[in-house]
Image (cartoon, rainbow, N blue to C red; front, side, top):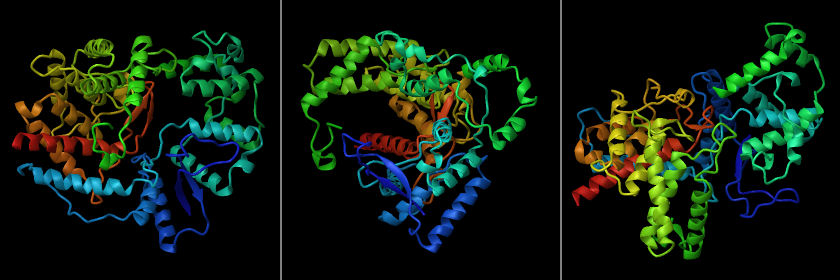
Length: 489
């Protein structure tokens, strides 16, 4: 039976500067688990395979099965279901939050982090398998049980491919020989691009082809609508190219010793250096470097908090960065009032960060046209369910696409943005409707449902942030409860 291990590692080839904190590895132990537990694992696997085209996420069910035994719920709080006429009170919000936090706390690993599946990026595992296969070390590195799980994963996600080198644009290994100060040197590529380029450039230079087995020949026959030998690889290459285009303020009693002032200064120096050179270290669409609203807003928010705590440290530079970051956010707003989200799906995500950043910089609904436009965008896309649901297609076509059903995370993004923008003081009903939806879709365990992928990068790669399903509903309901309490007091 498989079990998750955390913060373990060592040996001459594996080192860590922090004692492997946050490292998570699944290990197979043939002697682990009771017969009932093994039967439940088989049931979960069969259920996932049966519904794999409708529920693409594993929901980390094997992890939850293990942690339910290790960290049982501290107390059982009754489930809440609200009708449209029910008043949304502080007590109801508190009950929902207690249920969510109690459950979320049981999913924390011993080293303090919350493990989760990094799924959706379907090019990571196949590359490892290809490398092990062509080097003849597949059976040496991977145990039988690992190979079984990989086959199960491939079947569930249908990953497969056979292709010719002439169908690729050149991946020249000689690029590594140019002076490393040039921006085209692969060492300056984004981490994902750099690592893929390194191995692919070597293989391209060698024009390496693995053994042509009967399985490979059968795949060639199955994949192409013409004989493999007659495929026009030049045309295929260009077709593929077109497709690709498509914690200091919290009591030490809760969080331990506070971060030293010097370390905070170092962090601010780092942020300021990014602003001077480039506001972002990420690469949208792989190669070209663009700043993102999320990163800029987060940095702006941090600078404002720091300035309030340490008003004398590099004050002029910090104020200049806050001003420039605010202007960048405002200029990045679309005509419909939304902001494009680079790292999440998509406009609800980007708009939440943008509004938070602008509010931190002193903008309000009354003095900011950008915030008023943002509220109009969000309210115009609220579903009759009270929630928001955004399709991943939004990231691809760069236009808002409603998924047709509410998503707990998208709803939380929009709800937070409206709260930051002062919606409760104008018309609280849309926020209350969103909160009521979150409470009603909360599961019996206290968690919120795992729905569609919510992560994105490079406008076309989608994956799942495993903990977003709980983190953002907790943040949204907690923010609403805090505002209600503040008004009451």
